[in-house]
Structures are given as C-alpha cells and as structure tokens.
Length: 172
Image (cartoon, rainbow, N blue to C red):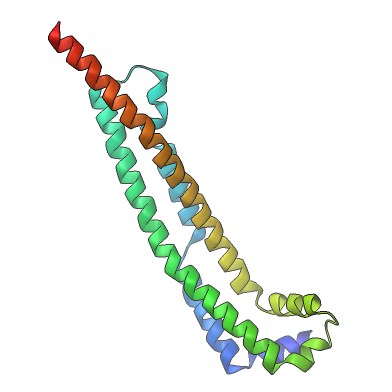
C-alpha cells in the first residue's frame, strides 16, 4: 500500500484535498471546543435552582446565564457547521476521484467493494478523523442545547410560580 499511497499523494486532486484538511484542522480546535462546552455547561446556575427556593435575583441571573450560554453554543455550532460541510464535500470528491483514477491499483489491495472502500478510507484517514471529531463536537453542543431548551421550560414555570408567590405577598 506504500506505493499506492505515495502515488496518490502526488496527485493534484489529493493535494487539494490535503490542503483543505490542513486548513480546516488549523481553524477548528476540537479540544478547545470540548473544553469550552464543558465549562459553559458547568457554569449553568439554572441546574441548581431545584436545590432551594430561588429568589427573584437568582432566577434572573440563571435565566440570563442560560441565554448567554445558549447564544455562545449556537455560535460555536454555526462556526463548526460550514467547516464540516466543506470537509464532507472534499472527502466525497476525493473518494470518487480515487475510486475512478486508481481503480486498478486499489483492486490489488481489496477484492470486495468493502475492502476497496477501506483502502480508500485508510488513505484519507486524516480527513475522516477530523470529520469524526467535528461531528462529535457538534453532537456535544447539540446535547447541551437540548438540555438548555428543556431547562428553559422548567425556569419558565418557576418564573410563573415565583410571580404568583410575590403577587400573593404583595396582597397580604
């Protein structure tokens, strides 16, 4: 496979693909994204509202932090999505190119379609690894966003209850 791999690496289409992978890899730091997501999720004070009867300032603070967290996570997701789309497109194009341009060479390394696909995937491992990392980061962002949305329902109900309690106190 070393000769096939070195032959493909000289291909202009492969060089273009490699440049795209390198460019996206330099723009997307998945470890930093995971760290930021973990920090944003850990700093959510709304998760602790059920531990005690919240005061109006605590509830306001929790709602404001939830909104800011949601906004930041949405920004992260919006930044990741075009990178993922570009990378998917580049991988599809180079896979198609390799299957056509190097069909006979690839057949030497695999007799079935699945084996040949694995050969191509091994050659493009950096791009696939980066794509998997970006997709995982988006999944983490989506999980936290889903939790924020579900918690929003809880804080909305809590706000109404607190409003009723304050209204009752004012009438007394």
